[in-house]
Length: 129
Image (tube, rainbow, N blue to C red; front, side, top):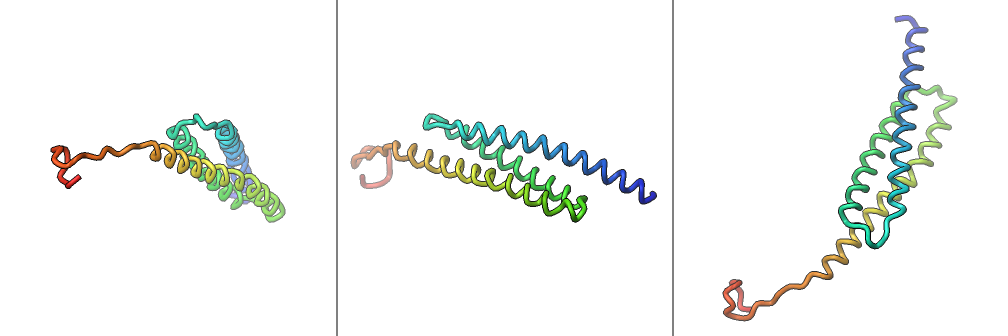
């Protein structure tokens, strides 16, 4: 394979990777926006779903960034790296925020649980209650 063909293949691969990254960036922005709309009535299942999906997309996005960086010229590398870091930091904070909300949600739901105390000889437990 000639050098020109390799450059053309690299250029095509870089173009495709950038398109995939743009699509993933759109997906993560959508999840970021949805998470921002959560309220006190948002269920734990919704928090878990969005947190897991957001995390998976972020991992894919970081992998795409790394693949792109391998193909970039030195002159483009630094600018692209800076842009990626600026984009990824808010996403990491959103994941931490939803994780915190899930813990808060769990804490408040377990605070509402009541434990029945059985009297001695009730037959429902083995302890001397």
